Length: 310
Image (cartoon, rainbow, N blue to C red; front, side):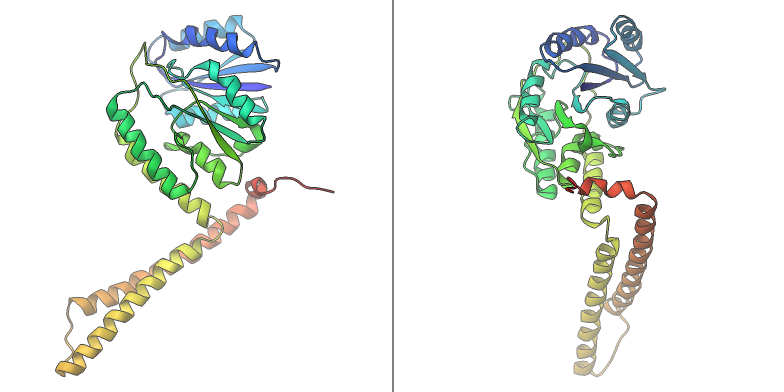
């Protein structure tokens, strides 16, 4: 079964058109399917239209948020309610072309666990494209995966890939990175990208800053979630080392001029010892918290196991 998840925020003119396009495509696929719309606090008539569509189509379900929580929260709601063993996500603004869905599914059938769309010919304003290029280069540098366009909402996943993912902040654009960091096999497919015809874009430059902070957390969690003491302890030891260099320099200076003065550098050395000790203490506390976390939630480690052979 295929579950198509679509966040909706003020897209009243696009919903019926998108629904028809989706039905035309999904009916050509032999698998059963469901379409899950998540109305994320729309202020127009989107929810009324969605309810009307769901009333006459058994394949359509609607999740209605109490207010606007953002695209990440919408995808999180959709993933938790999806019944299919294949998950497809896309935007409701008609810029993603449903006709590309079979191509993503064919790529999954080649043995991949997740497939991302690549809007290689984007129909967006220049400012948005420039921000996207910067964000994608930064993401590839930090995570090491080679996907060109992680910000494309049109993606396909096997169900087990996204099970257990907890999404928050602006992490919807980094789902493919999270999947890769968990050891799953990812790929990408060039997809058609259409100009927005109705409605207004919800993109803002502030998302770049928020997304960067989320990306740093993803990197930290992927590398040090099982050993936070190594991260904080390393920072603490580096500060000890710098403090030691300053003290040696001050001793040599005192020997040369026969006087030891309490100056800014000596105070900095003392400060580095204090902050280095604090970092190591933070590391121990984080290590205890992480071990308790994984002890109480052993399923969080299940993604490490690909198969058990008896």
